[in-house]
Amino acid sequence: MKIYDELVARGLIAQVTDEEEIKQLINNGRATFYIGFDPTADSLHVGHFMALCLMKRLQMAGNKPVVLIGGGTAYVGDPSGRSDLRSMMTPEIIEHNSNCFKKQMEKFIDFGEGKAIMVNNADWLLKLNYVELLREVGTCFSVNNMLRAECYKQRMEKGLSFLEFNYMIMQSYDFYHLFQHYGCNMQFGGDDQWSNMLFGTELIRRKLGKDSYAMTITLLLNSEGNKMGKTAKGAVWLDPAKTTPYEFYQYWRNIDDADVLKCIRMLTFIPLEQIDAMDQWEGSQLNQAKEILAYELTKMIHGEDEAGKAKDTAHALFTGGTDTNMPATEITAGQLTDGVIGMVDLMVASGLTPSKSEARRLIQQGGVFIDDVKVDSIDTYITAEQLKTGVKVRKGKKTYHKAFLM
RNA sequence: GGAGGGAUACCCAAGAGGCUAAAGGGGGCAGACUGUAAAUCUGUUAGCGACGCUUUCGAAGGUUCGAAUCCUUCUCCCUCCA
Image (cartoon, rainbow, N blue to C red; front, top):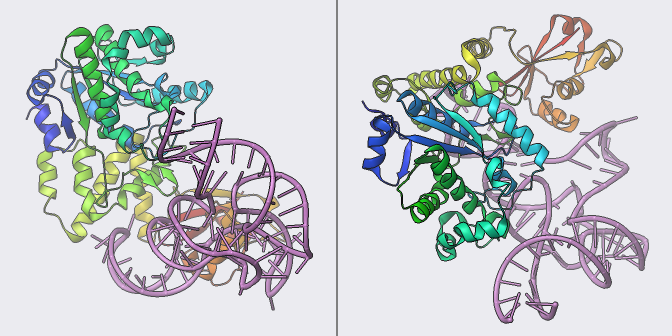
């Protein structure tokens, strides 16, 4: 199966400008394509991961990826998919985030000689002169058309600042720049980028009279139509310091039935025939599929060792065994009073609850367990002896934490 | 620049001098049921030395025994006119 058909079969492609042409280009490894990543945080998240996977797949098929770090566009801020103004980032933060992105990407994409390149649009965008830019590309953009773009429509009611309105022009300019200087003839991105990307191809056509192509990746939505990779606490990060491998594993392990196969198809490199076989799975077998998904993804991001550990830990915890890999907190002697620590304080010390009030509430509702025995009073105390061997604190059904005394 | 409207907890949204730590919904968390899923039902959802105390209704002042509610100034947002 050719790469393009595989992408379609995996459900990765959302929209394309010229299907035949794009098919030809990528199937024959003749595309030089770019995907932009704005450094809005100090770690990549699941959304970026999809784009990187696509990049990897295309690279394996002989195409040349260009990773564009949006060090310049981050100064402006993309209004797409946002209902309010982004807070402006300082140059220092942008710089820092860009570096973090770089490091994480190098794990996925082979930046070897001639294989792929990484560029930063700060290198050309920040040098632009306002009036010169207006004269160079200003006539190529119709405000009427821009306002019709989906990404702005949503903002017409809430308000859209001129700063953000210009984001599209910056992104279009990037494509134009890369087309000229790096022979980049294709742009990929999330589906929310579609209008920004189209204006890029339009700019190239008007300025250079050449064709260029754009393709968007399906947004990873769950069965309820919300973006995946987000939790109440924020994004699911790829940086192990922000989302531990175990948490990462658990995120996928706990996914809805309805979303498992879709995720396996879109995110893993498991051969399609194998995935098609899983399509029939139901009930407890489908539960197995979640484990496969969680393991595969954790392996890709954190490596085989970490994935194995996460899996073992999960098995041990959920089947009642003991395991040393669960998140742990060290209690110091100073936190003890008369050789004991109150259950409420222990909850807070281990980060299981943000406040004592919440810890109390949780205990009163019967949601806290020590070594799998329900804690039935907020006046429960844990002794130094117990802590020396380590106690397993469980909050609810799924959150485990170990506390021990050094 | 002018005329109106608005800002309430994680989000949406009621409240218009004491009965309000603030209705309702969403989301989150926990319990029951389960397959570490979904759906459903129940509880809970500011903090703390906890039948009490402290902080919280955009910000700062003021009136009052008492303010999310009344007054003054300021900040931000929206709509209409220019």
